[in-house]
Image (cartoon, rainbow over all chains, first blue to last red; front, side, top):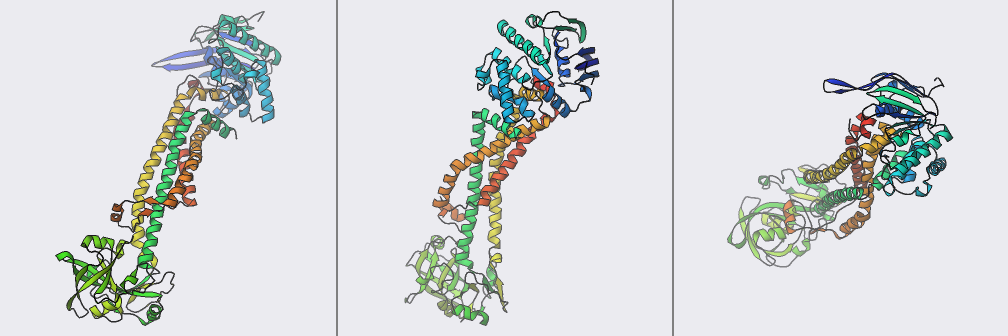
Length: 233
Length: 390
């Protein structure tokens, strides 16, 4: 793998059949993301933000072109290898938090570590560290139903960063949060980005998120319209 | 160990839904074990009663004797063979003479079998000692079914007509000295038991018999001219065929029970799969493989059976011990089943039955849990995250 980039897409195209026509969710997207970036994919609904995140996250595969993530070609990965890539190197944050309702906060955050078969004492230490980061250590034994939206998203962040991934993909992470919680969440992610050099890529059309971005990619109809590096995150 | 832990957390977290399934499944456990125990107990009880009252340690049949062909009875008698004489004298075997007769109870006639037996015999569990009387009238012992069908009761006289060895008709009055309640209808229906020496005189068949019953545990099975040895395996053959046919009926009943329980598990799994699509997508996004997801959901289903076995043990053990101790009361109509049934049936719950049923239910539950989860093998993470099935 060329160490100069973490993610590289070449002529990345994703199409979906719709009746007799074909919809281009992504069309010839060429991008490079380096380690430690704090980038946002912005654009209207249907512009291809989530599709691009899903392909980078190995949840989906390209119809044409190539997506290389940490040296792995997504289009050639088996389901098992894609799962391993996600398990080891990628953290996800979802718009609707996607916490597992029957688990406690601690167990939700612990889950990615269970998949990596990390031993229990190390696991406990890592979970508590992640919860400290999002300032929810005192809610470790709570169930998701007992948390506010902001707290739930912070648990989701803790779950995404607990394994110290190289890449965190966040799909509309503030869409269900009020302004205050949105800012808190973004500040937490900025801190994590700076502390661990974790690469963050967001899909968003929330102005509150955009003000924290160091790089902004504007997508429209599946193509990158603009790629801007911003001076101040 | 990760998958079992997660499966346990999930079904524990599902709360009431889990417990409803577990309780329903535990009913199946207890009902299947109870029914099968009842069948086993019934079979054991019937076989024991039949052996005690009818077959003891096996029989010798006079060569013409065929219990299923009444026409053979005229010729089915012969001298007690020398080889068996000593056993009879030592009361290690008893002789029974069987002849067709006609009785005239309450001014009507009815075909019957006269059976001669030694009053002092101890080989069969028939209380024949009541036949040892000094009365001039021939004493007869009948079963309660015979008493019911003829209207005879203890102390009644009834006219009996028979043909002796020479084919000559003769008749006499005999007195019912006892009506016994027996579980074995084969020694009861249509039969009158009288002292064998009296019967030999009536029939002009001195020292003759139709069958010779060996004492329990007898190993004597020598080949004897004009007599055929019938071991217990042969004598109980029809009864065991009957058990088998009845147990098939029972099996259908508990298969239906099992199917109902499995339907509940299958439904739960289907509901789970649909309700938890987003959760499956999340688990896949976090790095869980489809194979592990299938394992997780299958194990969750199977754990219902394990929990059900534990719950069934909690309330089923005292219940089954109670039933096995006090027995299960049978209605009078049970006589018409064609079996030797007592008033109470004592179920037999063997370790094999309990372990076998538990293993069977767990295996079937696991298979039923696995079937719906095969859909996961085709599930795309992006579809699952959107709450859709691929």
